Length: 176
Image (cartoon, rainbow, N blue to C red; front, side):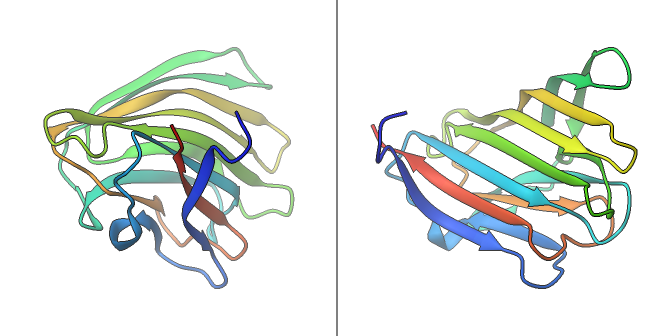
């Protein structure tokens, strides 16, 4: 990627445990066709949780059951698997993230069609998580919100508990 092609739009560094993190909303810049979200050292305050994501309109998460996802799960303790879910009320981004010192989740995702009210918003994902027993799991895939609407935010939250201190979420616009 060319130098200067990523323009930082929004960033949240968790300084005390929070229920969710939202990027975009009032900070959204609609002048980009593609966006990138980088998640670094994401951890829950409750052991063995799944990080989930929803798209939003005006900063309010879309809680409809219109989320579809498919990905390949790669793991060091077993063979790979193909996984998918349709008609969910969220996207699962990282699975089985824990609270031990070495347990963290990281991800890079790209967001598409967010500013187009006539198309479905979707994302592609590369993610990894290391759990307490040293199992490294990686996800490669993507998902779509099957509602034709302009979206302008992404919300992240764990299946239960909070996002813990030190987790970092950054939203970039990709310069044309």
